[in-house]
Structure formats: C-alpha cells, structure tokens
Image (cartoon, rainbow, N blue to C red; front, side, top):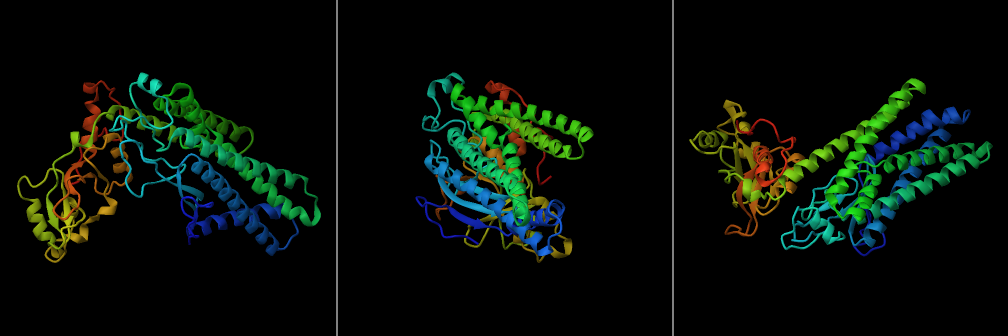
Length: 451
C-alpha cells in the first residue's frame, strides 16, 4: 500500500507500507499487552491489555515515522531528493535519491535507504571536479580525492542523523515524563504504555548515539572529523576505530552485567558484537578501497563470454561448452529471440541438468535473470564495482556493458567480465601502484563458477 506521492517539491514524502509491518506491530503488541502490562497494571480485562498493547505499538510506529519525516526535511534542505518512507518489518526507513556525483556516475533510479550501507562514489571524478562540501586543499594534501562510502555528502548525512536523534530523544523524554507523572487509577494503563514506549524510544536513541559505522552517532562523528581535517578517508577510519573500541567496551560491560545484574547484560553483549562486526567490516572495506584506488574495470576485465540462445536445448549448449577454448570462466550470456540480453548461464548449471532432460530442457531453464546479475561500465572504478558482486553473487561475475558503443539495435554491448579472481589480483598487485597489500574477502584461492 502506498500513499499519494506529493512529488519532489511536496511537503510530505510518499509512504509505502510493506506486509512485514504487521509482524512488527503484532510482536510489540504481544510484548506489551501480554507480558508487560499484566505485571505492571494487574486486574484489567484482556481486551484492555490488547487495546493498550496495540496503542503502544502504533505510538512507537508513529514516533519512528515522525523521526523519518524530520529526516526528510533535513534531507531536502541539503538538496537531496526524498523518494519515500517505507514501513516494514524493521520499522520505518527513509529512501533517498542518490545525488549525482561529479563526472556523471549516477544511473537512473539509484536510491539509498538511509542507514543502510551504500555503494561508494568513484575515488576520482572524471572531469576533475571536487566532491561537494569538502575543502579542496586538505583533500589534495591527503593524496587526492577520496570516496565516501555512505553515498552522501557527510554534512548532509550528519544533518539527517541529528534530525532523527532529536526527534526520538524529545518524544521519548516527553512520554517518559508523562508516564511517570500520570495519576493512578483509570489512567494507570495509559501511563504505563507511555512510560514503556518512551523508555524504548530513549533506548533506541541511546543505541543510535553510539559512534560506529552505519549509526547516526557515527555519521555525526564522521562529519565532525571531516570538518576539521577535510579528509573523508580519515573520517571513516576514525569512525571505524571508535566503533571497535565501543564494541569491545560494550561486550566487556555486558559480560560484567550478566554476573552482577542478570541476563539483561546479554543485550549489551549483542549490541557490542554488532558494533564490533560492522566496524571490522568497515575497516576491511576501507583497506580494500585504498588498494583498488586508481584501477578501472577495463584494466582487469576478462574477454566477453560466449553467447547462448535461450531457446537452445541444454544438450546442444553443453556441446558448445565442451568445445576447446569456449570459455575460461564457465559463464555464458543468454539472449532471447530479439537478441536482447536475458541473463547469464553457468556451465555447472547446464551440467547439473539430468541426462534424460537435456534433449528437451532449454537454456532458459537455468538462466540467471539479468536483474540478478551485477553490471558495470568499462570506465567505472573497480572500488565501486566490487560491492555489487558481494550484493548479487548468483552469477559469480560482474557483467561489463559498454553503453557508449551499443549494438545495431541500440542496446549496450557485452564487452567483458570481472570476478573475484580479477579483484583479488588487483589487490595483490597494489604494491606496484604504491598501495599496501591488504587481506580482503576476495583474497582466497582462485575460483571460477564453471570449474
């Protein structure tokens, strides 16, 4: 379900409701109405507890939506396009249009779910322009233009974070105050709902304040470091290091709380483990981005894979697969009757078709659709292409499409492949370009899907 879109210049963003929202509302209703309120306010009817629990769930949802509405205002003030507010299983999410980077790296339809890791911008704009909102001299002194992995100007990112924290903090404090000061009797149930929702909202705010990657507190810290140093890479490194320290500190505090207070300390251990994990991952991505800086897709890509028609039988396709020198990657592009690119097929998937079915089964049966295959342009930096392979690993390769030299029908031409082995090789040869060798998720034995 979706509300009417008010447009880019509208006062309210589009609100989209996902089916998972019902699950979240049900969980909070049960937690509050069946477990908490009967203990804190006894001797009430079951319908009263259910109604109060449902009211609390809707009140908490309203606070989260209000926070995203304030974030959308801050985003528009920063010149960003607000696409929607999505209500789902994990509460409320703000969806922004990704700003166009200098050099025109944006593709139509690019979006960012605020608070979720986004693909970084290219490490180097093609037209020599500087990234917006960043001083020129400190960046040059730091060794040239740097990528920002959040996909947004850090100042805008921090403004959006502050708007959300201010909203949840103020509303949580108001509800806690009202719940604590409310008289007993008939208002006791409503007071407990306000107290529970307010306390939960303040806990959310406190967790968000922890300075680690992906949290509003980390975004604010990154903007502060960037304002002082002018170096986005250093800002991200400071946030990651701080997140590691915070993570270990919370794990230690949680373990101590388990012995001194009770099992509630496990929550601190869980939060610390999450902060530690995201911080370690951010550090690994920063090291990989540094090693891949200056490398473009065209520098490492394999030759284009052979073509297979989608209507061809698997038996005929396997004969072409077995032909000498057919492919070293085990990947084939699959094309429809009109020569449009339908997706890719893997040699191992073709071989997995039972012998009795190969004479009748078509290649389309084992085709990975193009929507599940990551794509790139030859002139894109490898540092922003590698995350695409991690997010859509079904094919095992990034398909390189040349949009500037299309085929006779005006469609992008397939010109190559980039896989984990190519990315690993680029990382291993980074000392030849004056970069440090770093371990990464791609530094593993050479593997091809077709072998």
